[in-house]
Image (cartoon, rainbow over all chains, first blue to last red; front, side):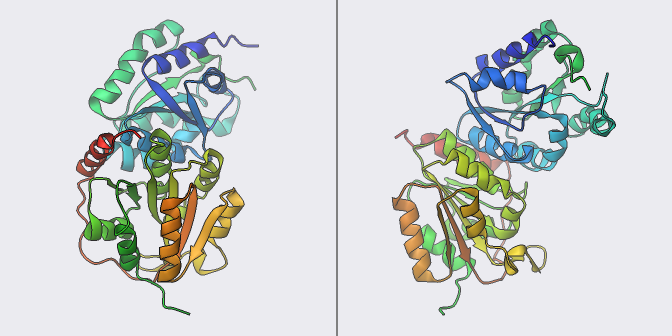
Length: 171
Length: 193
């Protein structure tokens, strides 16, 4: 069993920045983060059917004065790219994305690799600032600042969680 | 059988009943009619992200359970996000209503038929998703009764309104940042209740 101690740090960074509503399509890696949030009575976790739905839902949450985060695999970034662009970026609606990074170092499934390699370029193309912390120390030093930037700039930001941090998924 | 309403006439029947509800309108025709007929700060027009109208409204409803939220979607758009009906059913917000202007075509792009022109019923799909208060209405009388129920009873409601085909009159003002800010400010000013 891989060490999942990193996952509480991710959950804590989100919670201490007043993020209380979470939308998710789970994967193996982010499920470790979700376990902390599901058991927290102060947090609402909504499982959506497709990541794009989470963007719409969390845009609504922000329009109603609250903060939200979408927790997903990078395959889901592909599923929600248009909504991110034409809703959040176009209308300047911030949302925090937490994305497990499949399809990069150590990947066993060839089908994951193209989206894995496209993840950074898609975020860059949309002008979405992201961090890719390879250790808990990096996560802790960057996390609060990234979330603060999202609401200062009123645009989405992303945590991309690489296998160096999470242990990835072993095939 | 009575004639179907136009989307504009159906929008007017809703507008006369509105007080402090948040109204989220779908991109294109629904937003154009709402903006022309009943522009108000508590309207949340959408201009992109086709399919997301019902989900945006769900997020507002969950964050502000004290405010009634009415989404004005289109058949083509909801068909892009049918999973939203399952999420609405699972969350079951009592302050949520999804109205679909169902003209059975992709109006904005030239009137190509959607699945509701054939065998598919959005009200039946909503019931299958787990939303008990899912209605299909075709006449002014039915629609007025449905709106009165929607504004008096606990939701979630899904009301598929069969309307005549046809483009909305006028021109949509697309201040995509300004309207979002205006809506957020107006909603924040609705006292918590």
